Length: 402
Ligand SMILES: Cc1cc2nc3c(=O)[nH]c(=O)nc-3n(C[C@H](O)[C@H](O)[C@H](O)COP(=O)(O)OP(=O)(O)OC[C@H]3O[C@@H](n4cnc5c(N)ncnc54)[C@H](O)[C@@H]3O)c2cc1C
Image (cartoon, rainbow, N blue to C red; front, side, top):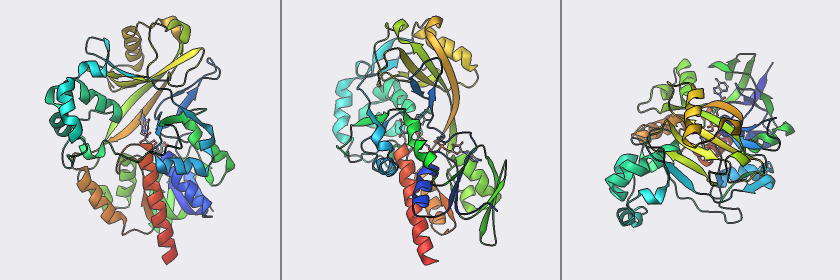
């Protein structure tokens, strides 16, 4: 029988960081993942057409203020493969397709008035639109900043609760300010070869139920039983699984909705793109994409890579890519390979705090059920790992009472 002390559904950073802790504690643990690889929103692609080159299809940057993520990397020694990101500018693509700098589009005097207030005026109960229009001026917000926030969140961000957008965290100066890993962000999952816990890839969980002191987990391939269960799936999946067991969390008010992103990863011949100066990315102003994230921060002698996060779901991806390449005057002959992926991130409700307070209240009554993901305090990987570590601590406390 597939019987474990701990089952984790979802093999993104939330699920894996929890599983690593549980397994290190000696608890028999299984990670159940529907895809054929771990990572979820973290996926680094490689191409046989571009040797020694990789490109991110999702998350791309770790900051030295990500203390929980760094602790996770130290524990599995991924930190030894850290690679500093080179400083490159983020640009804007304006309505008419021109590439400009962010600063040149802002009224700096008006923005400067708000800057000192940024740390003083709390964002509580305000939307991104309300808070940043007030701080930096309506025009700066409407014409420029809202697109920057859309790019950060990969969604239309005006109604997003401002207090969940940024968080000031202490920097750990032992590490570069921002970094990735030698083989990209997917390295975060490479240590799993060590088989500290069982890994069930290509297993999509369809149903959960709790009977006679055990979770019964039905997947597309086989069933599992566990004493404790962590759901580390995107919110809409977690909500649907909880609804099956009539859990009150499934019916809370102000639930996050989902933002679907169509990501195209394009590998380019560097020699044919010299007309585009090195950049960290491009933010779309009234474009069909939120942002393009470039690989230029880790220079490669032969190739460049652009990952474009499109929000338009009505136009075929090939057409979107063709338009994008035309806007940057990139010839077809420069394109070496193209990959496509769908990413999903949560869109928090303006009253997310109310949702969260109610969720925590219900969750803390549970001793068999644990939840993690990017729908708690923020979308960043750091917040996912932090939530998983907190849930792990709750698990250990509950076990000590049994
Ligand atoms: C384009 C993009 C860029 C980003 N850039 C950054 C960045 O630079 N820095 C940063 O800190 N954060 C970034 N983020 C945010 C961050 O990557 C995510 O919030 C985080 O990785 C989410 O991790 P997760 O494990 O909670 O969820 P996910 O990564 O969504 O993982 C959930 C997992 O559950 C699996 N699953 C779903 N349903 C089932 C089922 N029924 N049965 C089994 N498995 C299931 C999925 O396949 C997936 O693997 C970015 C996100 C995106 C989309």
